[in-house]
Length: 250
Image 1 (cartoon, helix red, strand yellow):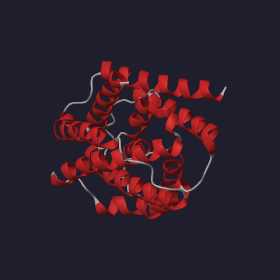
Image 2: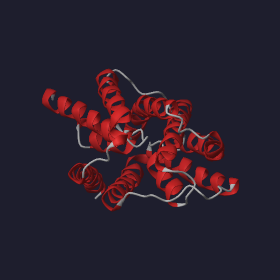
Image 3: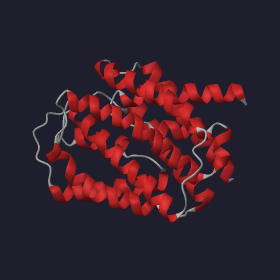
């Protein structure tokens, strides 16, 4: 148990380090690591709330660093938040059962792994105007996913911003960071009101791990993209976690 606990803590540190480099909170990584450990038996509410709490730490640090460098664009950010926050709050209150959650989480982890493996450096010029109606629709859909799965939504929002030419990578990172932070807070509040706040007795070492990883990643990691070998390793962890969840359903 102790050895596994130490591996979990290191895994959370690594996820925070990698994800924070691009302004993400790392919930998909945290869910993957926790799903491969004894903590997977704690249930979907426990996993979601722990991932959201860790998101608050890492996304908060990432947003602070990117905002400090002048990359935050309020006009770009607020339309997504108007719908994502209430939809996350609503979806976090839904009880879908362990099997339903295992299926949703597995599908999302597979998607996250695919994005990591297929993702390429995107240098789309920031020359397109964002329509508020599009942002409201996108924010609502992502918010619904956040509440059901237990993520902050950055892994979904970032590529949308960059591919559509609405933001350059670092501006997208800043927007994603605050997007993740507020959605995670909405998820915690919504699930706590509709169900309950889980026991946070084990969270201190996890917080320390992601705090360190998030600081290093967001401060220095964004200057150098992760090497392909790291991306492959991270994708493998996500796929293994997804497979484990699928096997539990069968």
